[in-house]
Length: 123
Image (cartoon, rainbow, N blue to C red; front, side, top):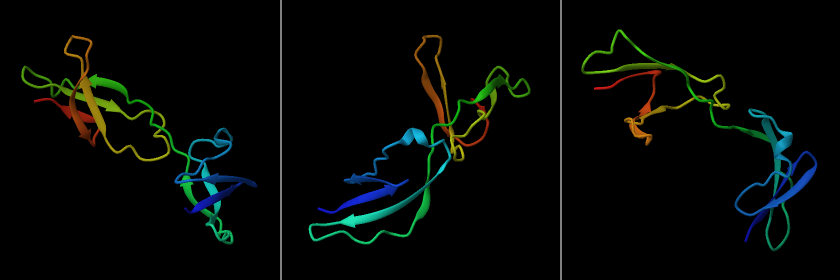
């Protein structure tokens, strides 16, 4: 089995199949992660890899805000909704939105998913 060690801020952390950072709280969201890797097998360890910077600490985006009825669209057969992205995107572009409603039963049902704009028209 091949093991590797991650050298991060002068600390060595061994991993199997995943990197485990010893102090994730030391990083802020969207901070870049600089790391070096050493591969180890039953014979010995490799030399350190060059320092790499490809990882970024990410998190969930903030919830959308200002959900509103678009009165220019809404009529007896359809509803137009608009919203704005939340203040923070979590460090990467928001891919899409999912719209749910509760039908008056306090049980949310997905109406649409994969919405790539900040508006939706029900049909």
